Length: 181
Image (cartoon, rainbow, N blue to C red; front, top):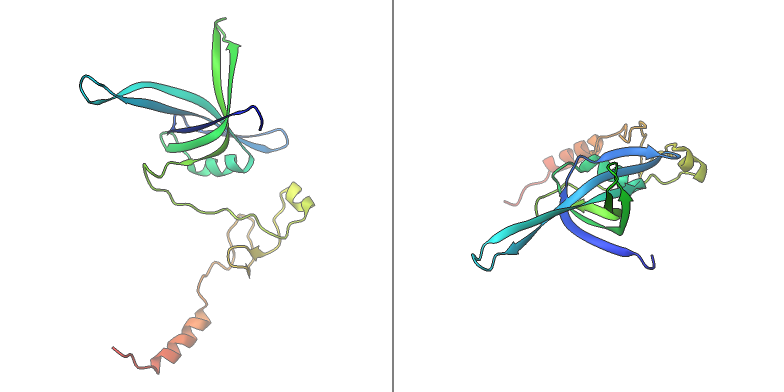
């Protein structure tokens, strides 16, 4: 991390993100993020748009998987990552400059909208071999620590969040209790 330029951008997703798996199944998401600088015109006192700038963004592994499920073109985002500016020669022979960001974090800008966050829990109880092979772990639901059967698609077979027997027992007890109001 020495001698690296770290960049923070408030912008928008400029194109539909592209998700692929490369090499040994490593998730990779690419997209462009843009931003338009605004300035105040001293003559009129009005805010005016200046030029719009873009960077090519690459996200890897878990960040790429998570973003692939929730980012779409036009979404307002906050981006933080390592800046890489490099010259190249285009197809027409002209020298050009590519501006890329290897994202450390990227997410919705909640000052411009709302989002529903859902934490993705890594199942516990996997051996290193199971994790490398992509096999599901045992049968524990990490959120509440209750054992339940996993159908392999992440949904629990016992999806009922209420214990019917406990509710019925409570209903019988509450029939005998007088309300104070």
